[in-house]
Image: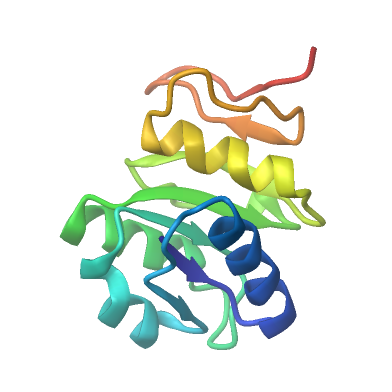
Amino acid sequence: MLIVEDEIFVASDIARILEDAGYRVAGIATDRKEALEAGPQAQIALVDVNLRDGSTGPQIALDLARNYGTKIVYVTANPAQIQPRAGTAIGFIRKPFSDEAILTAVQHAAGVPEALRSPDVTFFAAAGGSSTSLES
């Protein structure tokens, strides 16, 4: 797992959630340079849109997807800013997030059967479709 987030408390919270669930965090990146350096070690990346080097999250996600096939989950307070969207993007979690939302998205990205289901995760439909939430 790669966490692309410039707010250290938010990044640390995501790392704690993942590590407590048994996942290995390959790194925390606060900008484009760090994200692309850590990219080869991660199959899944949780990416914020607005980072310390600007609104670079969408482009970072595109590069991770193209270069390494990384599955992308956006974690952002501004989902309307997810443009362009990476082809491997599975969805987004709106900040503030819950532990369950992070784990739902990661388990879905990892293909875990019988994964958790949080209404706070919005999954992208296949090309041409619309987004769907897991609300009951």
